[in-house]
Image 1 (tube, rainbow, N blue to C red):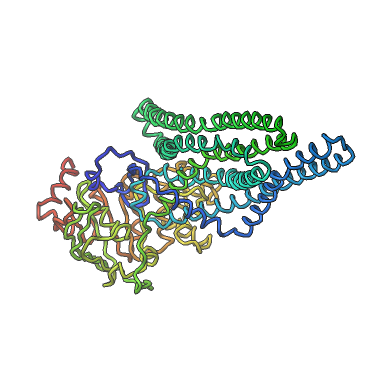
Image 2: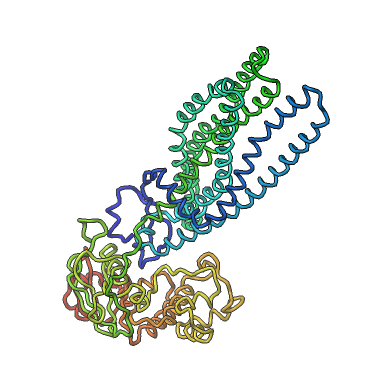
Amino acid sequence: MPDERRKEVQTPPPAFGPGPAPGRGPGHRFSHPSAKPKDLRNTLRRLWKYFSSYKSMLAGVFFLIFISSIISVVSPLLIKKAIDDYIVPGKFAGLVYVIFAMVLLYVLNSVFAYLQGYGMMKISQQVVFNIRNDMFAKLQRLPVKIFDTRAHGDLMSRLTNDIDVVNNTVNASVTSIFSSTITLVGSAIVMLLISPILTACTLLVVPLMFFLTNLIAKNTRKYFSQNQKLLGKLNGIIEEDITGQKVIKVFTREEKEINKFIEINRDLTRVGTKAQILSGVIPPLMNMLNNFAFIIVAAAGGYLALKGSVSVGVIASFVQYARQFVRPLNELANQFNQLQSAFAAAERVFEIMDEEKEKENEKDAIELASIKGEVEFKNVWFSYKQGEMVLKDVSFHAKPGQTIALVGPTGAGKTTIVNLLTRFYDIDRGQILIDGIDIRKIKRESLRKSLGIVLQDTYLFSESVMENIRYGKLTATDDEVIKAAKIANAHEFIKHLPHGYKTVLTDGGADLSQGQRQLLALARAILSSPAILILDEATSNIDTRTEKHVEDAMLKLMQGRTSFVIAHRLSTIRNADLILVINNGQIVEQGTHEELLQKRGFYYNLYMSQFAVV
């Protein structure tokens, strides 16, 4: 966020490296306050939208689950038949057929279990594929302010860890829940048909199960939600520290960073432990109640058998049904842990998807065919935070082909002017015109294709040098790329790289010097052939010799283009056609270098503070 916006933040902001917007301003990241989890019904509804694309496959999986569950319900009846009809009467001839039927059912059950697991795996992978694609696509369409105000590590955690949690739960829990439900209902029906009295004995423990599960559930979901948020925060710190290793080592702040990590890790461990302990109580608790149900059924069945009310086969099958009835409750309880974590993770994913994307182009927005490069700010007011103006009534006029320099102290509003021209942010009131057309009437894609931006902190991708330059024009040929590199004075150093233009860069081009990265950025801008050029402190971090190469390339790039140059080194903007002196969000002076020196005003004092010794 721009320097002038720092005062609006009430808590100390952790920095997360250079950002996508020009200048040091939007390069800063601030931790975003945790939002309350969305309601469970809404989360389930949105998840179903992804599953509904695979209704036929889901129907097939659920059919297999249904058949498998019915087999589980029918199997104890065969035990009853074997005991009552063959073992007790001593008719062993027919027992073979019953045993064969039981073996066949169990084999079929195993085959169906494999098929339903395979099918659900395919569905879950496709669902997660779509969710991840949708979230990444949404990230590409979010306004710059989202990346200015959220930790990159947290966004990465939502895109990877949280979606993986959803995937694991979908793959493991959905089939288990449906199977348990069918088995539970089927077992209850058969139990009622066999012996209502023994069924009532079994159901004695069910209300206690629901009461205890609900009691635990009130706290576990809260802790799992906190666990996911802290995991995102931890990833943010990791991403920040890896990116800023050189700064950490230069200032010997290793211990500080370790302590900061330990503090968040301790909070994550504390919350995770509470969540796991609370949810971990459920399985042994359910197992204990299951054993109680077995004891009750065995005792009641034995009493009824002595009175002649039920047969031995009924008791044997009912013991199986009692376990089979309570087991689905156990499984549902065991899945509770994963479900809570998955709902919390899904809510965090949908939270990003619900962020307002960049405003749509107006209905009558136009394409810029060819432009002259005339730029005019008319009474522009802008605030990052409502009521706290950063720019106040800014007006100026840049003629086609002119070089406009923006100078002023840190936080004056220089970078903000550039951000408004690129529509990274929209103005509060006033107008910004290009060739007399309000930029809000121009399609964003068309507007930005007409702009070329070279930042102080150049970003390079983990691709070859050739592809990094070609990023300015994806349809460019290799010859066009090389020609642009030559104009930018980058060709010579590229030739000496291990594989020349095919050399793959790593870690944002960290294996190159700052000057070399700037030359590649200039080559990229040259290749894009923009009508309007923005140079934001493009020479501030490089040595004098390299600066000469960069400035020569900049001059070639600026020829015939309207150029906006932001610089603290006033020596770099002496030849500008118009210098705008900005302070506290206002243009306090404007004119050429000589004109401003003669006024002996704000610019004069800035200039003398740099060159008084000379």
